[in-house]
Image (cartoon, rainbow, N blue to C red):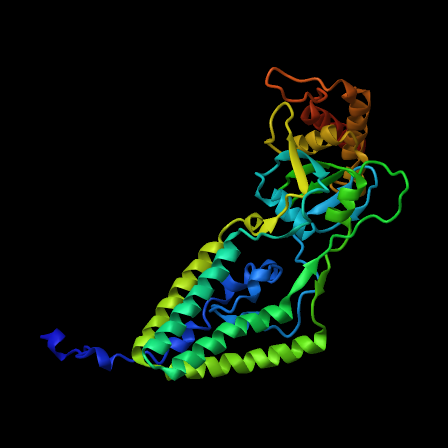
Length: 379
C-alpha cells in the first residue's frame, strides 16, 4: 500500500525542531502595528519573549507620530493642514465614517485628568505580561530539564525586549499655546477622503494641541546611544536564536508553543481599535446631533450640512474643498447668505431633541446655478 512506503516518525525522539528559531522572528507586521504606543508604556521594560524583535531594531526612530489622511481647516483661523495628527485621529476615528457623513462634536480639556499617554490597562499591557510569563515558565523548564542552552536562549531573547525598550522609550508632550491674547474659537472642520466631514467645536488651546502643533517624540536616549543599543540587540538576537537551535527537544517544543501563542495574541491585538491602547481621558468628547442625522446622499448635501453646522463658508473655499467653478462660487455665496440669516443663538430643536439647521434646498440651488453657468457659456 502507498501508506506503507511513506516515512513517518517512529519515535518521539526522532522529531527535529531545529527550525523553531524561525518562529522567534516571525510576525513583524503584528508587532509593528502598535510598536510606537507600546514603547510609550513603562510595561515595555518587562523582560519578555517578543515575536519578531528584529522589527523593533530599526536604523532610525520615528521623530513624530504617524499622521492620518484628512484635510484640517480652521473655521475662523482658516489655517490648513493636509494631514490629521495621530492623537486627534485616535480620538475621532473619522475615517470610519460612512461616505458623505457629517458629524459634529464638542471637545473640551479636563486639566484634572492625566495627560495623553499609553493605556496602563490596555491590551498591550496584557501582551507584555503574557510574554513575561512565558519567559518565567521557560526559565523554570530550563532549570527543571537541566538545559543550559535553553536558559541562555530565554535570558538573551527576554532581556532583548528590555534593551529595545530602553532605546525606544519616549515621552509625548502636546505643545500648548504660549501667548495669552484673546483669540477666536478654535473650531476646525476635517474633510476625509470618503467625502465625510467632522466639525469640531473647541477653544484655541485644544485646537493647538490636537490639530496644529506637531506631535514630537522625545526619546530618552540620544541617537548615538540608540545605535549602540541596536547593535547590541542584534548580537543578542543572533546569539539567542543560535542557543535556541541547540536546546533539548522538549524545550524546543515549549519555545514553539510560546511563540505560536504570542504570535496569535499579537495578531488579535493588532486588529483591535487603536483607541484601546491610549488614555485620552483628558479630552472630553460631547457629540452634537442635528436634524436629518449624520448620513447624506452625496457630496453637495454633506458640504451644505458641514457649512450649516460650522456657520461659515470661507473654510470650504480656502481649503479647496468646493470645486472651482462659477456655479459653485454662486452656490457658496448663496449658502453663506442662508447661514448668515439664520439665528443660531436660538438653538431650536425638533421633536427628537436634535438641533435644527437652516432650511435650504442645496441640490436645487446647485442645479439652477449649473444651468445658469451653462447658459452663459453657450450664449
